[in-house]
Each structure stands twice: as structure tokens, then as C-alpha cells.
Image (spheres, each protein chain N blue to C red):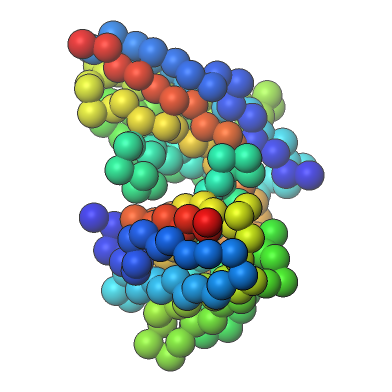
Length: 114
Length: 114
């Protein structure tokens, strides 16, 4: 079965500090894509970052970056200079070659303390 | 704003009833996906359409059905509703429905079955 595991149900960080959210996944495919989505209290699902598994370089989007460890099947999200607006649920997800469906983890609730 | 619209935003109905959720994809996107987010099951893929044709099916109950119309909007029909169908239903869209494409999510329809 395709699975995504987010081992931290909740995390907290001080404003302006850095936090890392963990994600591991299980796939036997070599062609797949990894995503982090953010769900703020408004419930809207917002793409944070996307990584292609065949690319060794870690994706970066402004204050958001990933640490992609393909052999370990790990895909963690680092948020630098945390802001109050970063408070949300964060979901790790992937799609694998031949399938367009997103498989999601259970999510990590991030609290940002002022 | 992702460009994906969903109506209605909220829906309250009774067990045994039937409801229709509507989704309009981003301009130019040919593929539409439906996901269900519930407390116990998390985010689950239901079904995908591409240019009017069903492309992939996930954990969609037989009481649920969907279609995509020539103007590319999609409808998800839920019938014989049960309490457990209460959830947030998301529609997402992508340009070609290919694996790895970013899926842009609508704001969701919150369904409450009483």
C-alpha cells in the first residue's frame, strides 16, 4: 500500500526561528513526485513546494526548502524565519509514475508563537 | 486564490438525502480531481476526470458518482447520505492530468449530514 508518514502530529516554533517538519514515504517506483501542501484555518489547500524524485537538487521556494533523501525515502520541509502566517496544517504528499492521484500523510499542525 | 471555484461552500442535509457539489477548474485546465477530507480518514482521493472522461478512481463509494461536462466543470453527486459522509470535499485541477503536475485546490465544500 502506498503510504506517507508524518511522525509529528504537532510542532511549535518561535517567530523568526527555523522549524523542520518530517515526512517519510513508501513507494517501489523510481518515478514519483513529492509535495508539501499547507492548510491554514481557512481550510484552503495551498501548494508550498514540489520536488521531482529524479532531481537530486533540493527544491526551494523563498523561506521554504526541502531535504530530499531518496535512499531513505525522506522528504522533510524546512521553514526559515517563521512568520505568524505560517501557522497551519502541513501535509506531505506524493504521486507516482502512472498515477495522478495525490497520496497524503495525516498532517502536522504547526503553531507559530510570537 | 487558486482559480478553482466550488459551490456551495457549506451544505447541511439529512441522512438519506442526495446532494450535488459543483466545481469549476482553473481556466485552461483539463483535468479535475475530487478529494474527501474527514477526521478519521484524512485526505483521500475519490476520482479524476480528464476532458470529460473518467481517468482514475480511488476510494469512492458506489453511492457517489461524478461527471465532467463539455465546459469542463465537474459535479460530484452523493446519494443515500450517511452521517459518516460528513466531510470537507475538495476539487482540484491541473492542466493535463499528468503525474507530477501541480494540482490546484478549490476552497472546498463542507458537508454536514445530520
